[in-house]
Length: 100
Image 1 (cartoon, rainbow, N blue to C red):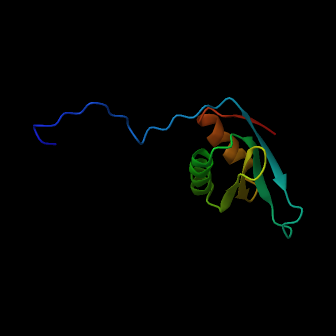
Image 2 (spheres, rainbow, N blue to C red):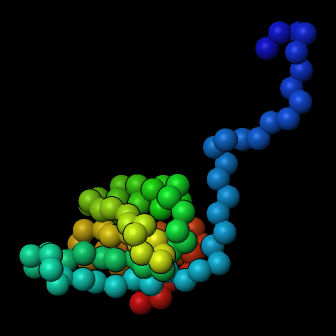
């Protein structure tokens, strides 16, 4: 920055603030998936940046694949395998209430 300029206003672009006033519902699905087990996290806030970031974190910490969906009323994350306990622990640490 040169001496002729000054910083007027700055926000940290890495700081992300989300409102966690919802309860994430965890469930297992096998139907229509060729016998494979999938952990579904339902009733999440429908915000693509939030879902994308949370999906990436859950996939890396659980060591499995997954995706997020926004085509329903709420946001949904699907993680491959029965990872309910790991996901419940991760969400609780983030301050998100879980059920199921």
